[in-house]
Length: 261
Image (tube, rainbow, N blue to C red):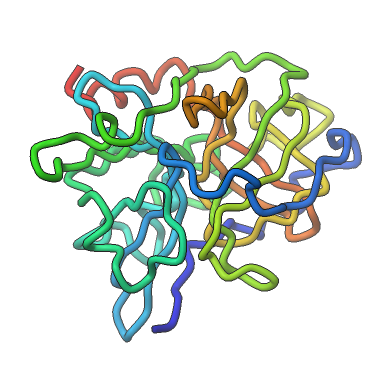
C-alpha cells in the first residue's frame, strides 16, 4: 500500500531567519522503543494509499484525548477530516493491523482560526488540534496507556525538549518512533516572520512528513512513559529546522470540548 503522508508544510522556509536556536540532535530512533502515550494517526486516503500523522495522548477528564496538528485534520485540499481515522498508541511496524490495534477517532476539534480557505501563512499560528477517541472493550486509551500532561502557553525558554514522531519520508519509513532533542527556543520578533512568532524552534532536526502533530515533551519520565506536552510538530523548513506550535490559553475551550470537561 502506498503512503499519502500529511506533510510538514515546507512553503514557509523563509519564516526562519539566521537567529535560530542552538543545533539539536538529528532524528534518531527512540532508544526505549514504542511509547504508549505517543502514537500514529492513520487513515485510508483512497487509491490504495494511507494517510499518516503523529500524536500523543494527553490527560483529560474523559481519558480519550489526543493532541496533534490542525493540518493533520483539515487542509485546503481536504477541508473535512477523513471519514475514518485511527490512533495507534505505541505504534511499531503495524501498517497492516492499524484498525485492530488502534482507537477510532470520534471527534475532530480544530480552532476557528484554522480556516483552510485562507493562506497558510495567515492560519499557521492556529496549527493545533485535539481528537476525541472512542473506547475499546469499554476502556479508554488513557486507562490502557497513560497520558502526557498538557501545558498551555506561555512556554518557558531553555527547557530540555524531546520531539517525537513517525517520520515517513526517506531516510525514514514511518514504522518506528524517532526523536530530536534540544532546548526550547520561543521564536520572537527578529527571529522569525509573523506566522511563526510564539512557536518553538529546533535546528539540526531532520524530521520529515509523517511526524506532523508529534509531541514536543519536557520532563519525560521513562518510568511512566510520559512527560509534559508543550507543543505539537507544525512546520519544517526542509533544511533541518522544525517548529512546534504551543497551545494558547484560548485553546482551553477547545480542549474542554474534546475532553468532556
